[in-house]
Image: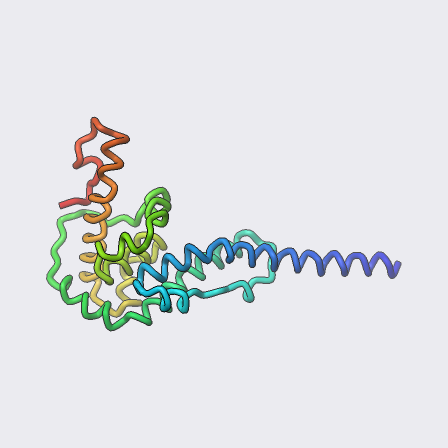
Length: 198
């Protein structure tokens, strides 16, 4: 019976190694996405690389749900580290949104398809088109679905500034997405294609 217990112990060890390997693979696959997140916030390649949070050492499980949660946590933690690296620039930029008025009823986060399309863009193409606060709110609220109040709390800016920055993001995104939408839907008026535009 010793050999039976020994084989069971070996199988358990192999499963643990497989679980770690799966998690390491998941984070290796996410590294580019984490880098994109940090680069969008910091606009500095070195700061972006330093901001990436590697959570592989935290996971010792085969649970898909836990790995998915861990990947989401790594994105939020990476964004938080990146925000801390550029916090003074965020506060300087927030002043331009302090008097922002918005007539839109709702500012929904990006859809999964919009997020995928955005992540396919080179961050260096987006950075010059949006100020730092707009980029941070785009990443946190638009892509990662933190609430607007969570964004305001994390960034230490007013909720009005967060809404104004995201309104600016939606205006930019509407202009960015509109040419592709016109090609796909030439009969739709632009107002239906980008409902959040002023």
